[in-house]
Image (tube, rainbow, N blue to C red):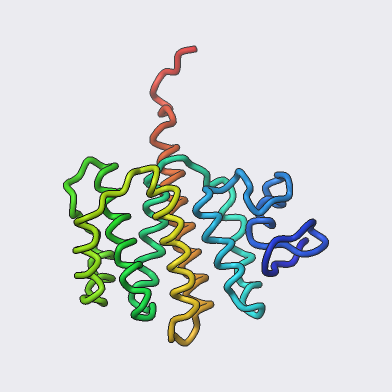
Length: 215
């Protein structure tokens, strides 16, 4: 079995990052971008793997099987991943990163509201609490966001990946006792949220046992 380590690896004998191990367990071609996992969730896993200390990385192994099969093209998944990352990092990040993270929170909430057909400005309790931790950055972010409107394509390609990157760097550089533990919790909670979203979506789409299926 490959051993988790930082970065990309040519083959299992040289070790594996989190997503390379996932590709191995899923029976896919050796890759850190396997088809078995949502691309943004996979990006978070790679970032956590590479920014966790060597001593703590072994604790990530138990999460690898749970990320396999979590693939979807629903933009709501991207928005939930970005939101989970930004709200986790915002309360602990250094002041110079808070504005960008607060903007990420608002962008993800706006995208979810748009996709759900809900009124603009809707905000979850988790986001509200995170923004209340940084009132100055939150107010600046609201002013900035009122003047900007992101497209769905722009959110998927730029805003959501940036939120994930900012969050991981913000946690790594935060003045907290155990950033590795927070990174691991972030990945674990994001996987659980994606599992509920993606597998719940599939259950809703599947015909019930009492519904006749016509050939």
